[in-house]
Length: 296
Length: 286
Image (cartoon, rainbow over all chains, first blue to last red; front, side, top):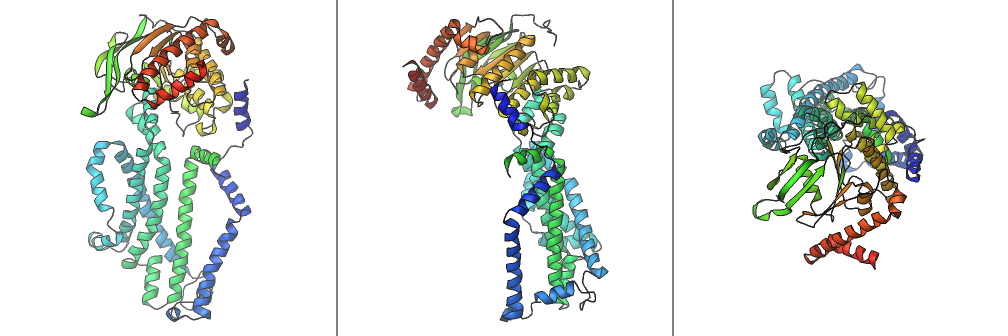
């Protein structure tokens, strides 16, 4: 064995196989050993302290109607909440579940329609000529501008909200998928053709997996904007849901519930993003290993 | 691997007859290949060497059928080349292993794509993995392999298809010298296994002389064939033997002189690459 090869082997053997889960665990433990989590705690503490002092200690002029941190948290964790909403009331979970269900429908629809459309748009130049200009015009229209049309077109209170949520997700997913296809180095498809693959095989084996990293970036953006549009939709239409909760609490002057709704949105929104990321790592083992060699 | 040489009827498999090729639109077109003629003989390893940026890669595009010559004609077994075909397999400069497939799946890609993923192919894949020293890495992804290993995996991925002619475009460029020599040995070993027709493009004189049966020395841009040299050093060759061989050094001097003349011509035409070559040449012979 030559020396060059020996170095090759020395580098690679003994290196534990990286899996999605393993990498997540490793990142978690090195994260805990780094100063980052403690900085994060300080960041949160700073925010909460500012809230506490401005509202409850200094009672600054514009903050007098703002619910204080003690009021919010005692309401949130109370067994007998004054405004009727806490982690002990079924109504709280009903808001969460209904929002989650809308997100699930919208995200699912946006994904099963957006990913294939994006793949074909990236792949077929002709199709892109037809559809992409339409996209460019529709994409900058904010979701809120769609609210009246959504209510006119869709019946009931549920479908307009799902439609609005779907819309923003769909654009994000489709565009990123298309960019993903365009990002694939031409040498991969040339190699596939050279090795005897048909056009359809090249699509399946090169275009789809090659675009996968972008697709998952798109899906992460998509789930983020889904929450954004969901809240917009729920504020206008619909019954129940976190956006609805925030808006009606404002109308009913039950201000602590606004904050409870907001924090819940933040936590749940973050969790759904994390789930999408985990799904991506699970589906792209090759990518996980590529990245594992790069960072950390 | 049994050698199946029944397909070699003629002597010259690929013949380029007075081909020219320009790239670019209308008045901005640049002539890259001009009145170029050469042949690639059956069951030989033909190496094409020329100054970097001289248009060798364009010739590969033409042989592969990705591009058509502006004038002239390239034929394979007497039939004009009009598009890509699986009889000609190109190994490109840049690594094109699919990052989302393991080494083994990459190697098996060709046979599987053609629906020939049976026992014969899996046996051949195992044989080739062994031959390029990657059996221990068959379940790794390309990003987990070193540069040299990736190139070897790619060689195996191409060779498993037993193409009638294999075309390699500077496949070992960018590897360090030690990995490069290792690659030459692996590659020459694979070639000697069944002596298929191989066409290999390089800018490295040592690589060219070590590997070639026939050496085509090209002119600078727009490129054409300057000289054809038969490398009559017996096979199998050893790196050290070739380095010490008088014949090899004689050929090397000749090729250097030819390339130097070409570089002189294009240096007067303002080429930066030629200036680099001239500097290296003067250091070497000075």
